[in-house]
Image 1 (cartoon, rainbow, N blue to C red):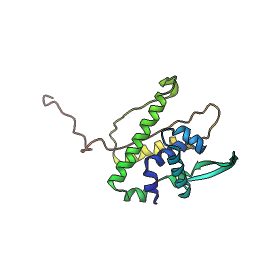
Image 2 (cartoon, rainbow, N blue to C red):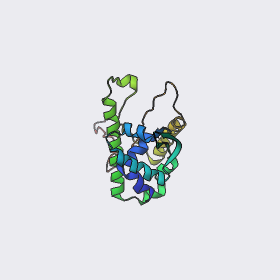
Image 3 (cartoon, rainbow, N blue to C red):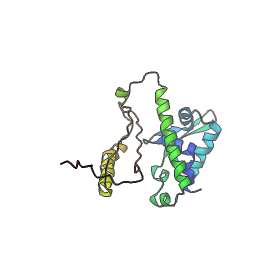
Image 4 (cartoon, rainbow, N blue to C red):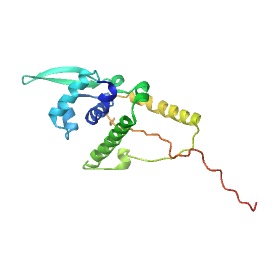
Length: 188
């Protein structure tokens, strides 16, 4: 199974997203976080991801006659390469985007289920912004954003740190990317 097919499955994509932030989890911990997925199904998906080397076993311990494994995401194996991206069908992209949006909704639903919610304190936000950028300005924007985000991806768990999910989406906003020239007052 190629990595596109492996990663575009909605359950496996949720597993990948749960491991983001350099987390290590046992299947029990993973099952507690993804409690809407039947354990047998979750274990099968984890095994498939281990076989594909997307998840690696970082520890094992014996508990009551069984082996409990702790897993970590191999981030380099959990990404779709630019070459693979270029060969994805429209339906593949639709499935990937649907999984992206479903993950976003699930994350927000989990946040809303908390006993105490404070959007400002918790740093929760969502926003849509429109920008007029030519291709060079857009590339510069993406590079600037990467410079801000990249060093923080290396942060590990520490006292006072909270694992936060940041999702981005960029798309041309309409069929005609060229703005109309401003109207002039003919009386001038």
